[in-house]
Length: 140
Image 1 (cartoon, rainbow, N blue to C red):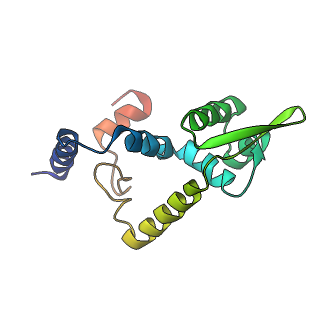
Image 2 (image 1 turned 90 degrees about the horizontal axis):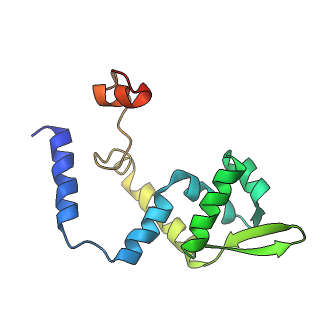
């Protein structure tokens, strides 16, 4: 069995299982987006206005605002008015514990998570596959 077939089989096995409860899936999906995670990591340092988050994560103001709305809807971020602006902060201190636990787990597993065939980043050795080159510009 080729490694990509093995990865597909593993994903299919995961989909076929009863799986975790829906709230846990929603929580981890909200954390799975790199931009939202970067915003949360910045907010772990303390409150911030949108303009400060834009500078920290390098995204457009509208994109940061959309991610903040998502995180607020998930109950992970809250805000308070300050003059004519709004300051955002983590809504739950438990989120700091979760992020610290994730860092510890990543340190313990080394590169295993990054190399996971289903969710990791594939190594960049050799030429890109036909599928990746088609994604890059729509052409093969």
